[in-house]
Image (cartoon, rainbow, N blue to C red; front, top):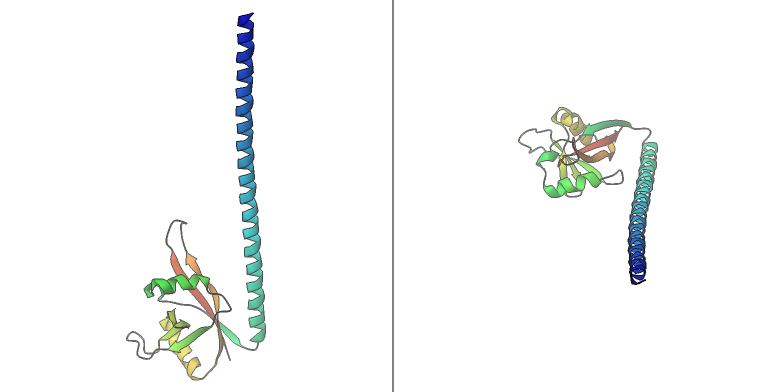
Length: 175
């Protein structure tokens, strides 16, 4: 009889441990499932936010193009960004169509007397390519440039772990 009671007690302990472990396993699974659902929801919200930001930028771009529809456009890739300060390089990827970009002649430039620097506030972002600088200098002199906007800006990476190269493309509206 003592042996039977001992076996029953052992069985109760084993069943309790199995249930306890099963409950812990279930809790862990539920926590993982909740964590995954939370991550999926955060990702969905992030994607929606990015889509909305893109939609807003597209609307702003349409509005600018509508406002300057009687102008011609010239798309230019800004050069010399590599030589800018880290602070300037940090600014460029976050520029958008709303940001005030100015083109300023730099006749004292030792490499190109027709050099045109691309400015954002007091930050020199880079230059108009030398092959186009004379044409842009003439446009500035003749006050033909009506608006300069950021077309695209960001960091180009071949691989996700690379530091990447900062780039900036602008659109010039002129008459």
